[in-house]
Structures are given as C-alpha cells and as structure tokens.
Length: 397
Ligand code: GDP
Ligand code: MN
Picture 1 (tube, rainbow, N blue to C red):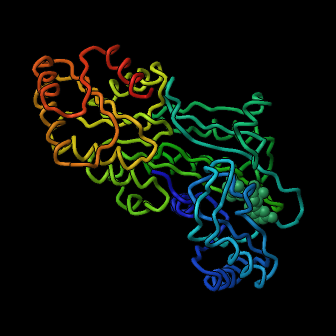
Picture 2: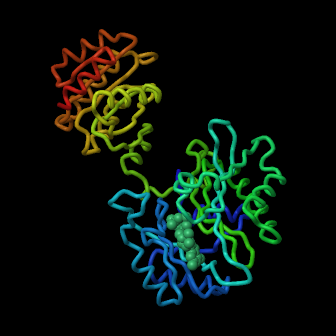
Picture 3: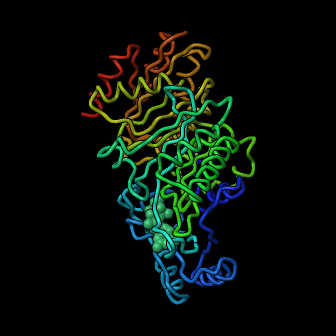
C-alpha cells in the first residue's frame, strides 16, 4: 500500500526522523492558513506547495512550486489543486490532485551550502536482508544515477537480527562526505529511518532528497513509503491512511471481493488459480502473440459465484478481447469449476461479448471438458497448455 508524501513524513516524524514540516490543504484558503501557521511555528517566510499524488517526479511535472509570499501561496495552491498532474511516473492521462502539502522552505541560505542526498531502506530479496541504499546524487532520478554513474550508489546490508549498527550509520555518514554536526545528524537520521522502516512493516522508505540544510541539519524533504499489505491487519493506524482515489478502481473492487488482481496493459483477460500458474499463463499468452490484460488469482475456491465475480472484474477492462481461464484442479475438481463457468456465463446474460477459452487440467478434467462442450455456449475448451495457446491465437485473429 502506497502512501502520500505527507503521510510518510508523519510516520517518519513519529520515529524521530527530522522532516521538512508541512500541513495538508484542500483549497487555496486552507493553503494560506497552513502557510501562516507554519510561519508562526517555524519562522519560515517562503513555502513550497507540493501536489499530493501517488507518483514521483512531481517537481518535473510542475507539481512542486516555491511561494515567496501569501499571495503566491494562494495562486500556486489554486493552480495545483484540481490539476491533472503528468509526471515521468504517471500515465499520459496524469493524476488528479486533490490536496497539496504546504511546507516550510528549507533551502534557505546560511553558513554552508545545502546539499541533497538519496536514501532508501528496502529488502534485498537476493540476500534476504534489509539494506540501506544511498547516494550523494540526491534530488535526481535515482534510476538515471544507477544507469550512468552506478559507482555513486552505495548499499549497506543490515542483519535483521541486530538492526542497523552504530558503525554502519557512521560509515554511511562518512561515505556521504559529511563531518561535524551534519555527520552526527546523519547518523541519527539513518538510525531513526531504519527503525521507522522496520517498525511500520514497510516494503520501502525512499527519501529523495535527504537535505543537508545550510545550518547543517539533516532532514527528509520527500518521502515515498510503501507499507506491506500483509501487515496492515496489525498496523491499523497505517491501514487508515489508504487513499482509494489513488488506486486503480478495478483493483480496489477486486480486493473488496477477495480476489488477487493486478491490472495490466494487454488484451487477454486471465482467470487462474494459483500465483505460479497465473505467471505461467501470462507467458503462454505472450507466446501466442497476445498480451495479458491482468493477473488474476481466483484462489482455491473457484465456485460459480467466484468465477462470476472474476468475470465481472475482468470485463471492466475495455481492452479485453478474449478471456483465458486456466484452472488446475487439485483440491477443487475441474467439473465443479466447469459448471461454475457455465453457470456464471448464463447468469451474466449478454455481459460477456468476448470469446472465452477454458483450460481445465487435473481431477475430472475430461468430465469438465464435456460439460463445457455440451453447454452450447461460445466457450472454447482445451485440455493441453499448447491447445489453449493455439486457441488464444485463433480468437485474436
Ligand atoms: P518529487 O519531484 O515528486 O520527487 O518531489 P520532491 O518532494 O522531491 O520535490 C522536488 C524538488 O523540489 C526537490 O528536489 C527540491 O529541489 C525542490 N524542493 C523541495 N522542497 C523545497 C524547499 O523547501 N525549497 C526549495 N527551494 N525547493 C524545494
Ligand atoms: Mn523526490
């Protein structure tokens, strides 16, 4: 589950990580009030107005702007709230901005130069350990840094049993070229950041940029946070932060009926039981010259009701030109699934306008094929994987 920048910063602050302070506003009026409050609390004269959407690269898309007085706060907030923000990380259609974060300007001049770093905490799956990834090249697109100057990206592997050790925090601050107050601030920053990542059950905390201010404070200017969905049951305070407006509406609906569904760009809808078989099915579709329109795991109980729910979800995607049902009958019997498909098809009347290919393998597969073939419906049945692929190819023309 992804969070907004302001929510990520709230979590960071609760673990003692220094952040660029800000207040959320839903209208230009609220933005002005927020700016006044920030000035009273922090003494800042300038403010940054930041679009709150689930996408990075907002600065590049015109979603982060500096306001030098209250009139500019109002004007900028007015232009950003309600806009369709297109960034390198959104689709061409962009994302509608419902709210902005009015934040204190932290790039003020002072005794030393400001500098921007990159830092993230995430799981290194190949090692089965957490890692802190960091770079002197902050504020930029980290993929580009990784591409052009990979030697400027450091990683620090962390043993989950011990957590981030003090010598590791010092090594990170040292590699970032810091000394004196900024060095000490950075060791504190990374230690608290790591704690926030672990104790919030997150998949990722990405802070880009981490700023060294002109008076040597280290703080998070941005926050991209993703909480592990599987941990939300025990992290209720974070589960409440979910903003459904930011999520794919078909995925939201699928989740509400307990289906594991991921929307993709292709034209062949997939209904499969088991994540592994779903992945193999997507490969099969590609080999047949199609592109999967979704990943959908109906799970272990593929009864008529579930099959129907899955049909409805898949058909919400207008790009779907064919549906491939690929079910392995292990615990669930194929004939039951076949009957479920036939019943769902009948229940849905005219709703299904695309060809359907059903491949049922496992317990009672032959009987299942008979049920499909005798149903009189425009459903193609297949027993073998290749047969199913050929049928997909055929119906895609
Ligand atoms: P992103 O573009 O979505 O990654 O959004 P960020 O929160 O990283 O902001 C984009 C850029 O805005 C940063 O890299 C900074 O250069 C700039 N920025 C953010 N906060 C301030 C601020 O307080 N003052 C100034 N002058 N610039 C800021
Ligand atoms: Mn950023």
